[in-house]
Length: 164
Image (tube, rainbow, N blue to C red; front, side, top):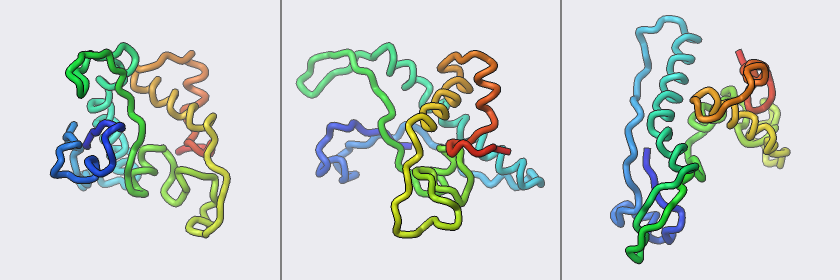
């Protein structure tokens, strides 16, 4: 997993030789073939991924709230609040991060049988994104929700459909 700063010019950021990216950590690549049950293996892989993200991004969450002294380009130390502004991944990674099912669009409400069509579908709403993000933050201990709300939200994916 790499990290970069958003206000670096595109010409610099796009060239790896310019050093605008920094490795934050590595996410293990495994198929967990010893787990015989396919559903259990998928769940274990998902949990492994989200556990790694919690370890890698956990410090970022606390510094995003409290701030962190950082030296700027002109040498002056300023309090910065780093945040995760974007996630770049291929389709399987987007499905994993957004807690949707494979075959669904993680960005819009396109029906499964109409994916890939050259047609605009309504985007997933901010409310749905917010609900998922708050639920994930609560699961990782970064946010406290009343138990009854957390329990009622547990079984839904980003699209609002029941999750198994």
